[in-house]
Image (tube, rainbow, N blue to C red; front, side):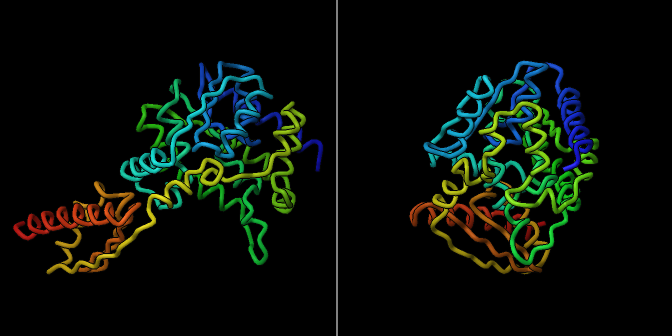
Amino acid sequence: MDDASLAQLASVLKTAVADAVEGPVSVAFSGGIDSSLIAMLASHHVEVELLAAGTPGAHDLAAAEESAALLNLNIVRLEISPTQMAMAGHELAATVALSRQEVEFLLPFWLVAREATHSLLLCGQGADELFGGYDRFRRDGTTPDLNAEVVELQARLPQREQALARHFGRKVACPFLDCKVIAAAEAFPQSERIAAPGKAPLRAVAAQLGLPAEIVQRPKKAAQYGSGAQKALRSAQQQRVVLTLCFPSTAIAKAVAAATGPDNRGWVTLERSGVTLEAQIAAASVGSLREAAEDFLACAALAAKVAEKD
């Protein structure tokens, strides 16, 4: 790797973090290289609070504690039961319009944003897209485009991370998505960034900046797996039923979808095609599935009756 490019990346990363912080900050912390590097650089300027979320025995809780100790920074463990994790997932899904996969991925961030002490929340979002961290970039037959990945993430941030932070009265900063950091990262060939195990330029710079080797070399673990969020959510939705409802007009179908969607998001997935509304209902048990279906049908019937009168 080019020494001048590494020096430039190190310089702009330090500046991006310094520019983002003005007072005490909270950090969405998993113990991996991305959040650890951001936390370490921020700690050179302000008081830093690390928050890690997960179910008992979750990988991220253990990794976060180990990394926090290596960095000599205080950490808050947000350890919650799988049932509580699933409940939080339903709250998240009912608050922001997200896909099921996005709910699983963003649930730890939601919990951190909810419990953070400080108004500014720092996160490592963007590092995997910018530096080729995801394993899917290295699968046979794939043709990754990291530039497109970064552009797409930047477009989603206002509806995802920023929206979640605003819900709790906080702001979020993602130093890896600073325009100068992006330019410095793109000075490295995409093949160099994607090469296994991924993020080689970032790992080299992190080591130069003083991040402990144990953190620099830690393998990538996606948030939904490392926190236990995906397992908790999918266990809570083992039972499913699909209902197909047909209405006299498209207008009524639209009205029912609009009326029932927000209250049931997370439990019920809706898809409308003309006068037809398909509802996929999920729950942890047959009994709770029946209750969810009955509640949804009652809401749908009321909405349809109101729409017919209009």
